[in-house]
Length: 249
Image 1 (cartoon, rainbow, N blue to C red):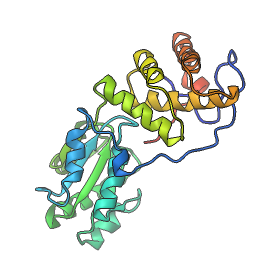
Image 2 (cartoon, rainbow, N blue to C red; image 1 turned 60 degrees about the vertical axis):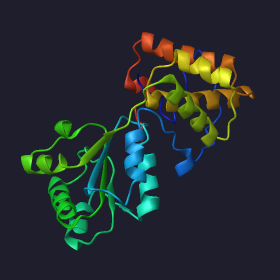
Image 3 (cartoon, rainbow, N blue to C red; image 1 turned 90 degrees about the vertical axis):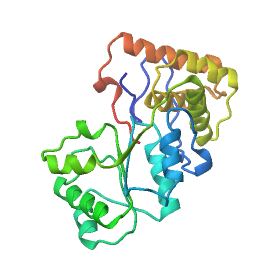
Image 4 (cartoon, one colour; image 1 turned 120 degrees about the horizontal axis):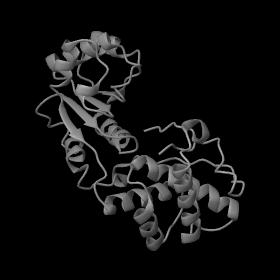
């Protein structure tokens, strides 16, 4: 389902929304919600520095917790986050300081730099954490050499697999905005929403904005109004031009 961008309004049928005052999501260890769909990935990060192999790959959709785990790993290991132009210089520099490369399956990274960094990591046992939305087989690589080395990574997936974990995610997202919400409202949302982490993020943002506009708490009525808007937009076939489309990690 298309996502509403931060600077767009809900459909005209709804009231004018208040400005988003901003919030800071927590990436603390205690705020990571462990469930059936991510417990192996979480366990891998928590087992550092006792890794049998140096390269780890976290695979999951937007908002599934890859960036959260990457920041937990950085805190535990002292890892440096690599920018899109840093891969080759880090490989040439050598050493064993852990490195994190997020969204490695994007076209922004230099494939040659990734090849050299993977080689150096495997050769020198340098801890390297990669995150991606898809498995190695689907990366836009042009050379088999890079793909074969990436496939040597220990790969772990992150998924939302049940209502409990989705409920926990909503509680955390509301908590990041300092919003308390009744369990019955969470249950109401989970029973009616699209099953995706990205949609959970969008719904929390829209419900927060609508509640601010109404000057009320996030009640079942506020939740129902936003859910109805989302369903109406889907039924009308609204495209990304109408709704926006960015979905940061």
